[in-house]
Image (cartoon, rainbow, N blue to C red; front, side, top):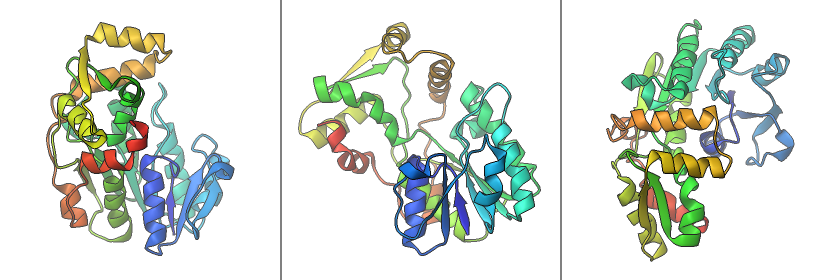
Length: 282
């Protein structure tokens, strides 16, 4: 049995569907099972990293766990620590953690630092482990959907990085392989798409899918911050995200071949993701 935490997220939902389609016994852990919509045959269970008493039932009979903590606060990776303790008691043998590419490139922003500390807890657990470190998700473009739909304009911040963006389904495909085959223990994989795309090129791809030009407008950091404040999106988490974007310009363009090596197929393109989500931009 494989337990997928973060089962309703961008990667977790794809992973659950893939495992179910391949006939692998899978249990999906979510804080709100009554709202979940999983394929037939998936066992759904209520569970919460911040409620340790929910974990024994979620982990009962489980051999491998896909680990997606909901976030990191100032107290550090409490969720991984709680999970590791419960996993030992349940007899779990392998933990596969979803992390971020910045860990491998020495990033020091709060989000990456949280993942780095979480990785360390997993590595020191005494259980077999594998770390998946994806770069920027293609779903990041959700943030531009409103202005693209209304204005055919994509407002980016100066210095936004060239990015080898990755489709969540490719991360899930790698996770399926890692969770169902041997040879990945003690390994950390950086995961990216196969194209390094500038914000301008991203806008061109969306425009081509729409059959209309999408104008890419660059704003200063101060202008972007003012707009985020106007929308009520300010606070420490936004500041952490902006710092991650600033630092990631040094590596987000680098392309890894891990997806192809592990799955045997090339990563999905941004055009594929846009076509699948064209209703967001139309």
